[in-house]
Amino acid sequence: MSGLPPDPPTGKLDEFGEIARLFRPLTRGAPGAFDLTDDAAIIPQRAGFDLVVTKDAIVEGVHFPVGEAPELVARKLVRVNLSDLAAKAAEPFAAFLAVAWPQGFSDRDREHFAMGLAADLEAYGVSLMGGDTVTTPGSFMCTLTAMGWVPAGRMVRRAGARPGDKLLVSGTIGDATLGLAAVKGEVDDPDGRLAHRYRLPEPRVDLRETLRRHATAAADVSDGLIADARHIAEASGVGLQIDLDRIPLSGAAATWLEHQADVGASLLRLGTGGDDYEVVCTMASGVRKPAGFTVIGEVREGHGVEVLAAGRPVDPGQGGWRHG
Image (cartoon, rainbow, N blue to C red; front, side, top):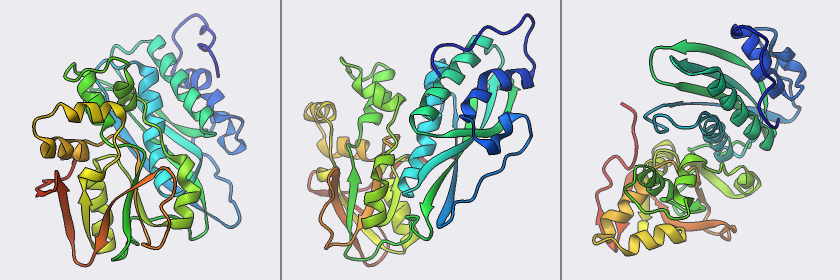
């Protein structure tokens, strides 16, 4: 869908008129969505596949800055949910939306939100199947339930890591942490790349075939690399060693690190900051490292996570973000 929706008829649309105008086109013609005229949908079956379902919410002032452009909020909402599917090696296909419009949110703001949602649902081949819209006296909040297909029995869980496995991560780590600092004016970001990584993460849906073939366990890096690796360790009943000196950095993050007095503390900041939406996973030691991944540690007997930075053990604390 390109451009703004056509101007509404005279008079403010009610909830159903708004849904028809802004969100019906986002069904992409999926028959089970019934043009969003019903209050339920039918999800078709796919022989030989399991349906993977995930749900994440994002809240103004917590997951995105107050006053963020509505279209960017919508796109981030799609991407953080598809990131969960990516780590499960699932192919996304459908979603349900719930959004709470804050007071003072104009019709144009809602249109821009729908535009951003349309752009990314189309880009990732996802149909909107239903949902709900409400107004709230509180902060802007929205949530997506995303669904994807994976061959039966092949979903990659957090559980499954075995002693002797390698610990790997995709892409680069720490850009989103620095991007949030750049949005706040705390870090230089002359080309805007760091802020872009924070605002519009790239869900690693391109990795699903590699994960299906090689990963013994996986999680997306949302709360922080260390925290999400710890989730794997706890679910698998194993211990991990992570060497932050080995984490892959972008050019911008490497330049930032070069100017920090305490390299160990700075690496820990990058390893606990979250919002990278890469995939941390384990693979058997005999598997050749796939392109796009970096080995950052290993799986051990026992429990807990040992973290090294600047060649020394460090205390990672919680390892990342935790909601109270």
